[in-house]
Amino acid sequence: MTITITADSTGTGRTANCQRLPVSTAMATLVELPPASSNVLDGSVSTIRLFQLTLNDVTVELSSLGASITKVLLPRNITANTSTPGLQRSLERDDVVLSYATQNDQYDDGNKPFFGAIVGRVANRIKDGRFQLLQSSSSSSNKLETYQLEKNNGPNHLHGGSHGFWRKIWNAAIVNNTVQFTLISSDGDQGYPGGIEITAVYTLVHLDGNGDDDGCGAKLCLEMRATLLNGETKATPISLAQHSYFNLASHSSRHRILDHTLHLPNCSIFTPFDDTSIPTRKVQRVGSAGTMSMDFRKEKLIGNALLQYAEESAVQGHVDAIVNVQRFMASEELDMSATVPDTRGPFGFDHNYVIERNLSEQQSLRLAAVLSHPPTGRSLRVLTTAPGMQLYTSNYLDGTTPPPALCKDNSRYCRWQGICLETQTYPDSIISCDDVGDEFSRGRCFILRPGGGEYIHTVQYEFRTMFMCS
Image (cartoon, rainbow, N blue to C red):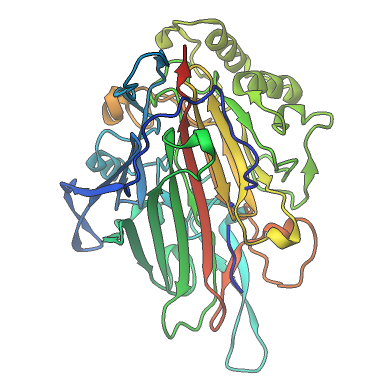
């Protein structure tokens, strides 16, 4: 069996009419940049390799450290006079992903927020850092084995542990105008059974031809695969996720993501969780009492949604969070140093949504999210084959982790500075029995088994800038 992790192509995420500009018919330009550094890792010297893809004024930079997205440059909106011959694209661009200033900084600091990286062996949380899995035994019957993992997120295990895939330097190669990262994870790595090989392939291509959309952006495609190593006899869970933080205004925008809108056209269900963010293994529809803030089936301003979430949750002690949201939304020129300190810790969305699809669409791309920034005319559409998506509003960023001196442009990344749209299988969903048929089990973690199929997870990021016309 093969699992594929994508959306309906109906939503456009447009915020303005797009003036058709000259369109390049060439493939993306792909170059390898000078390496970041050589680091001693597990007793051997590894070099962090860097790559740059450019197409239609969109530039994406990648790193072999965590198979990471480190930079996405998008053109700025322009007001164009259509009567003027020789209309030109805007040459000014903004970086719309949060990251460290250098890959050396990311390596040395440990990347606690998981900026831009692929996380695994199992993305998201595992309750008590423990799971059970049926393993083949020498006898005719299988044996249920228990595995104890590191608890690196309170009482739970998160994103593969403190030395998960996001922390490792992957092998890298340019193959047919794509960047291909590979990693070997041995039996026992971070406590997981079974040796596996993981491949992540990034490609930058033209947007699908829909008339006016041509020339307004580009699509970054990521395909993640995993297989057991040859001769491996142990089964293992696998769930990978791309953990980029997006801010379509700029990674350092003083308005954070509060002036963005979000549309989740195929997400009317989420998985409720307990006070340690572990799912109850039930599913619930948005839009009922207490969940109106989580209903993004119609486009909604993120700042308004956060205010509504605070009111619904009756979050005592988070008055500072509410005041900050109100100030950010009310001010055009907000001095970040003047905001109320984030004294009560994380606050915001950190929820797994079910991506609804018909049975015939189980292995096809499905539209998960449309993120838009009306002031710049930029939008991001996320399509995936995954059953779920974690909506995370960077609640744990506190302005000091990482320190501003280690961030791009010495930026102080605080909560709500970026938004993660992490396509995935559901959190804490390693279910050993294959015939479980409840709603939650439909998004369960994939299990690689000897003689079984490979894991495949596809996600696509469609970046657009709608150029205004006068």
